[in-house]
Amino acid sequence: MNFGKIHGIWFLLSGIVYVLGLIVCIVLATQNFTLGFGSGGALVLLNTWASARKVKGVEFINRPRATASLLLGFYLRLIVVGLCLFLLIKFLRVDPLGLVTGLSVVPAGLIGMLIMIYVANRHPEEV
Image (cartoon, rainbow, N blue to C red; front, side, top):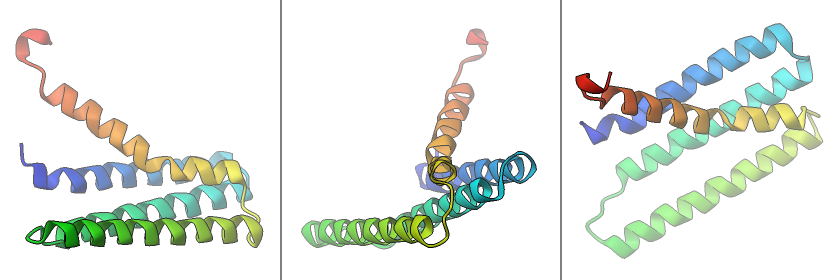
């Protein structure tokens, strides 16, 4: 297994969950819920992509400096996501339930990836 491709597969599955959820929201949900789902999903996917880029670009030659850099980037992204959530709820008046549902696309993509790994690693006699 090529562990370097895991973040790409996870991001792809999360994107698929996001697009499918967005289509379902457009068809079945209210405009505020759809706006919340779309903005929450986009926010969390952007955060995941930025995290993967940061981890991929860090040189682990100087371990304390690399750890500090990763933690600083994590906390800065956490502050930015919190501010964006506040602004979305306060000024755009998005549905908080839609926003939380949109924020869950990355964990849903992770669960989908784990299921795919489990199915792919089964032996023929188990099937």
